[in-house]
Image (tube, rainbow, N blue to C red; front, side, top):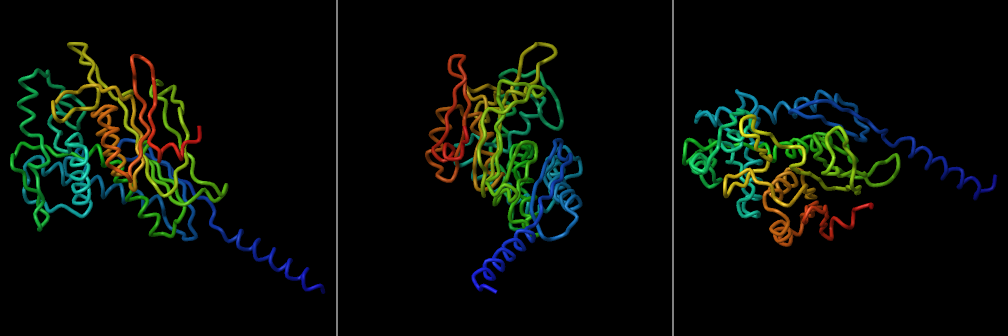
Length: 336
């Protein structure tokens, strides 16, 4: 037999075999933490992914959900000083402090009393707010009023401080699921929880980076359309916007947007319609996206200049006209 032909056949067999040995795409979806999730991954390892994901959501909720009365954070907010917080709580607290510092206080996890008063929090109080009431609630705002001891106990300088991680928790849950998949051999995956994303590797079926979309902020949930598409590889993305998050006071008819300025206590609308942020992990992306919505376009751009590892795509209103701004890093991954 011709050795060249034999070597070619052997090479083709090896290539074909290696292709067949590539892990197949697995997919799972469901509901958790008040939203939906969709997960795609490749792994040679056989494991109960649904059970694992459920355990991640349960652990995150038990630690940090203000919607669960017996969670650690709920008990802390009610004044229970005996709680020893877990690693997840500590990590989220430290990330919150980092974002708070880098955004000059526009990201503020102690804004919970105001969130509840406006009717956006777990307690859904919907207080009739005036300047006096807002000022009285601002005394409880400030991450510097909270610390964690070496023993893991949370100390509040003012017992009325209400801590919440809802503006970063969904992103943190994405990161925990991503780590869970990696522990089970997944080197290529796309995790999406309520619009927050983390991607690693590529879509092996197409041998291309994962492609994700950004919602058009002018559309309703029912009319949901994509305004931009980008590739996501070894990074996370979170999007925040006021276009679907608001409530109308049944008495006054006043519209309150979901974003609260922690410096003024006002639920005020900036000129940003949405902020999509790329970062090394989804918790950071989630937190910065929230902060940028309160900061507005110019302050967000100034902050981004100081954050080389963070990129953003900002959709904003300029005299009634919808415009966009993208950092150079974000421009590189945009597909249209």
